[in-house]
Image (cartoon, rainbow, N blue to C red; front, side, top):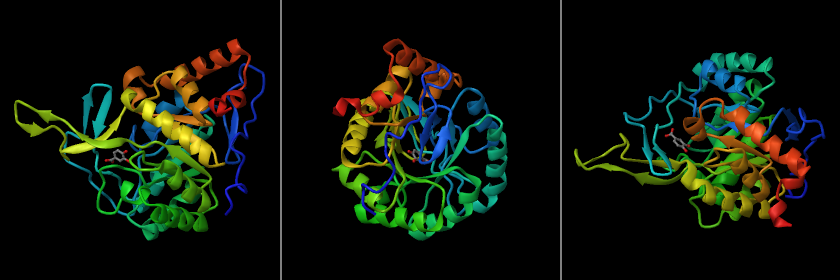
Length: 324
Ligand code: DHB
């Protein structure tokens, strides 16, 4: 598919009313605001998602779901470091067949709150992605492909997202079996993010989420003389990764036409606005929940609205504006 035949990345229907200033339409879907929950942060249960939804998220993303049940790594799976967190959960999940009841429950919980559900999925090849996508598609509003976990190994995660051909194959296979919009979540751990972005767009991706965690990195406890994480190393998230995420969004925006969801160290409305100026149409919040609590979604939305009203701007005025 030509990169110019896909969605207009600035297809935002915002209005001048205070309440509606954050409404947007992306991938043909109406969202009440552009501040979403990132994958993995709150696990995959309906009760956790509902708490986030009640606190103002425009969409919630599940923990990545795979073809089979996975227990995940031994504890500790997360450790705070300067500027953020390292985590290696080991893609724990119940497996797609077991997960259907829960995702249905999540969807019902989100309906009255008008919050969209993004199903994050992973696999080690296009066949696994195909099976999970086919099963989950009718239960979610969008599918996000995790081709970017930095420490998964075994052919999973960034082993796919660091290779244009493998990324293309996964996206085109999933697009063939689903009608819901498909978004590829990319890793910053590549030589040229524009090449990967272009190949997922050519494969038919409806959007791109950028970025997944950096690294992997490692922390050692000098008393026990051992690495802290059960997995020894893990992906870096949080405030320290934000400038890298911004640059990746900036580069991706310059290379593709499909919308970008920015993620990486967003804690405040001004962080979100920065991502939008680099080219993101919406954002996801992950580690920020640890810094500002569940209320972070309402707070960031209020901060974006305040900025837009004060400056007499619409969201569409700021998306990608640094490229002008
Ligand atoms: C895990 C997966 C990710 O994609 C990521 O960025 C961090 C952690 C995990 O489950 O280990």
